[in-house]
Every structure is written in C-alpha cells, then in structure tokens.
Image 1 (tube, rainbow, N blue to C red):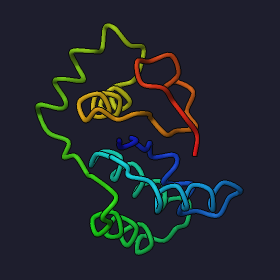
Image 2 (image 1 turned 135 degrees about the vertical axis):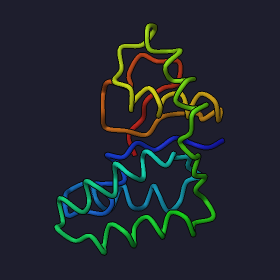
Image 3 (image 1 turned 45 degrees about the vertical axis):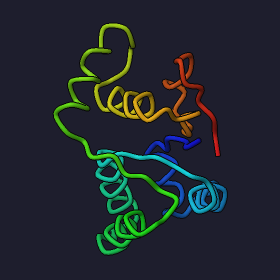
Image 4 (image 1 turned 30 degrees about the horizontal axis):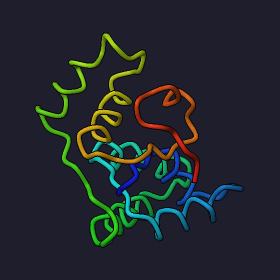
Length: 127
C-alpha cells in the first residue's frame, strides 16, 4: 500500500538539514503517492532555499522517472472533492487537496512533519 508524502519531506530530502538522509532514503525506498500540487510546492521551496532553480527542476524530473512514485494530477475533480471536505476538516485548502488525494488513492498514511495532519482518518507518520 502506498504512502502519501507531503512537500516538507521532499524539501528536507533535497536541501541541507539534519533530516535530509532519512527523508531521501524514505522517498527512494517506499512506494509513495504525491500530487502535482506537492511537486509545485516542493519545487518552489527547494528553489528558494537553495537558490538553485536547476536543482529544483531536476528534482521534479527525478520524481517523474521514479518507478516507486505515483503522481496524481491536480484537476477540477480533485479540487472539488477537497472543497466538499472543507467544513469537516480544519485544514487549509492545499492540505485538504493532499488529504483528499491520500483518501481517494487509499494511502495507508500521510508522511509529514506537519502536525496539522494529526487526528484524521489516515494516520500521520514521519519518515
């Protein structure tokens, strides 16, 4: 069963910090699901932190080439499925899109350091 990975884990994996190796290893070894909004967020943050647009772009290319990563397109259906859940969950819309992606794809967990994913139907875990 796949695990949904939040952008913070990806950013940690591609920037210099104490969590880099653990996050990179997790991404390389697990079957994971992300959506294109995660890629956008990750690209933006990695480019800003590293001041290296090429690194951020190469990172995105790696995700599209990886056999263990399923990338779900952010589209109208996903957006409206997230909107339907907005009254039930106290999450900002981008996090609702991520949570909804994980729900619709049957992910076993959401891998994130962000505690706002706690206490949902899908458990939050750290790499």
